[in-house]
Length: 395
Ligand code: FES
Ligand SMILES: [Fe+2]
Image (tube, rainbow, N blue to C red; front, top):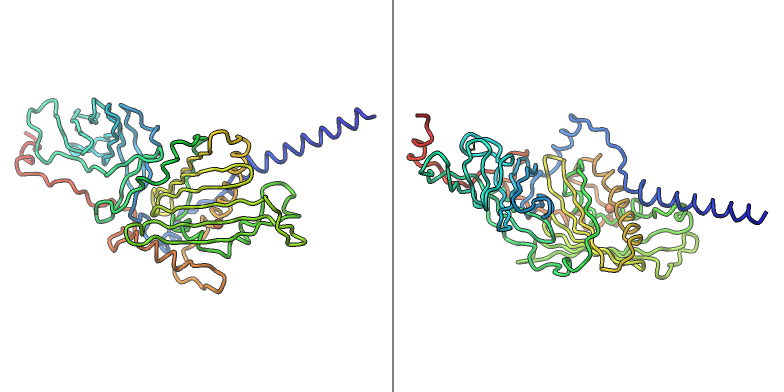
């Protein structure tokens, strides 16, 4: 009899663990399926600001391009050839060769140069053609557009500016402790959103009580609720590209409203322009750092990558739980953003939060020439010289 009872308890315990695992680690990460309707997406897109704000954007993780490798990346309405020379430096070039438009990403790396797969012209990381195997003179203007590139936090980033202006800020020197943390994993998703919706999320105070009031632990929501204390600050002058958001989330008993001590957590978020954020989570079960990147691929199409870090010695299960919670919260937001239009003149009321202030901050990343549609920005490569035209003409 006792054995039967113990067996039943053990069985119930295993089932409960299974449900918990499913809820937190499997279901929590799944997004509600979106029925994609191209015509509706076009209508939605017309309401949003331009798809490509100015700033640094990720083209992928540093380890996605090893020494001697080249990859093709689709971002910002075009294709890029991203390669790493044998000296370890990364070059990012427009993908089409200026000779006869072969795709350079299907070429190969030789020394520190990228070699076109068609007629083997060699380009350096500045996009200059250095060698043509069957012609002893390289025309002066033989070049392909090169992009300003940086690597930080294990991410390859390029500078995009609609007017081809040089970078006015970088991520250099920020969060120098990240390389000391233990890298846990990288996740990547393509979302049908405009990246401005993500930035406005922290300023939209009212939605926290309705979208983020639940926990992923089964049944917990019957008894407890989450309360958020939010704060947003914006940089000025040389650091006007930065904004800081904090969320102190505490658990309260639903019935009495009393705060449950040592059960909440704090999120500190730094926005680095439109394409990068660093999240720091501080909780009783452990801390976690997320480097989150948003790269617009096309109108209402954004690649979101998360690089998950935690202090050495943090329990894996704690990171798994924190990541599950964070991912569920993001997905609850994303499900709304993927189905909404942009409210150009929102009907705001007291308690809505500083949404218009956030928009004002965000507007610095657009210029009058920010393309309304995913067109390619003007290349800043030298114009062909008469001599080059002669050399490139068929005999
Ligand atoms: S097309 Fe690239 S070398 Fe000819
Ligand atoms: Fe949200």
